[in-house]
Image 1 (cartoon, helix red, strand yellow):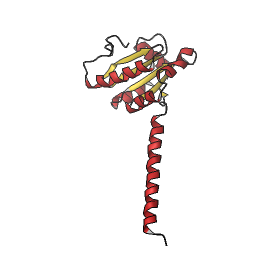
Image 2 (cartoon, helix red, strand yellow):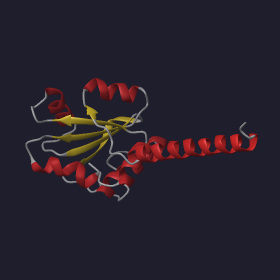
Image 3 (cartoon, helix red, strand yellow):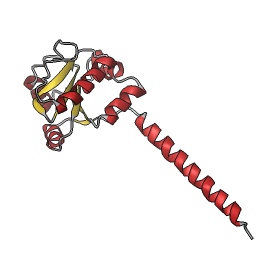
Image 4 (cartoon, helix red, strand yellow):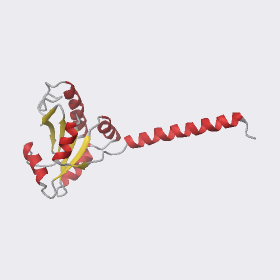
Length: 168
């Protein structure tokens, strides 16, 4: 016959193990790079209609800068967590095959070169924050923080940055 005290200790040990596994899985999840879904005008519009902020990485396989683009701007677990904790929808606009939708996105935002990040806010749909060329992690994180404040203060514009200079 199993003593009741032994049974309680076994149950507590099992609950402790489950709690550790849950905490570990959450830490691992938050430590993973963002998952980039393909950009389409519909995916952007749907996210904005749901009041979600969207981060688009604009890249192409035919240039070395685009391969470095995400690696220099999103290179640490801290950056992964900021992106995930900000609730950003992450989309990749791939200009490798001159996708007409991607070309239109570039034209609409006055971009003639890649790589770039575009940060769309539901509060300022027509005025994304644009970070072009090789962006540092700190620049990207500053733009995400600025955008969070911009969501709460509709008088702030993409052209106004935390540095007093243009983020465009």
